[in-house]
Image (cartoon, rainbow, N blue to C red):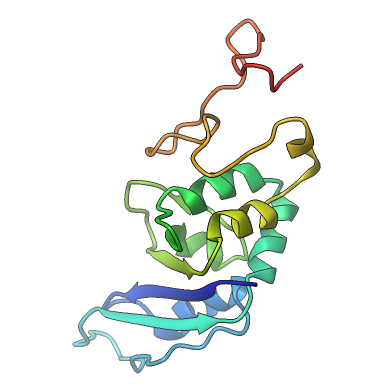
Length: 172
């Protein structure tokens, strides 16, 4: 069963709410904000505003990850903040505006971020299943395993500088 999915973003006073909404809908087509600020002419007097809304499915999002062949990176980023039945992660809003996914780990990014919150039972297992690919038959992955990227986004190397495997018993 899919988790409860919420997507939110902060719209700064100088940003267009319509363009932010459009960038979210490139990856989550059925997303609609619960409340959205009006477009303001320049100079804007509007304060920063958070828009948020629920989505029923991550199918478009997951399809983009499969097309880009970044399922292990996606899995690592999505479980990095996993706590029992909840997780959250950030992606670049600028990348989303062109239908691409770029995970934001640690530092702020130019153009803002989209925050995706997931809540549901057996969330780690659901994320493993959603990001499964045939390479996992020979290198299985689980949330928080020794193969996960570091919290700053640095990858764990599977091979040393001479091409020798650094993982035990997984790479043959």
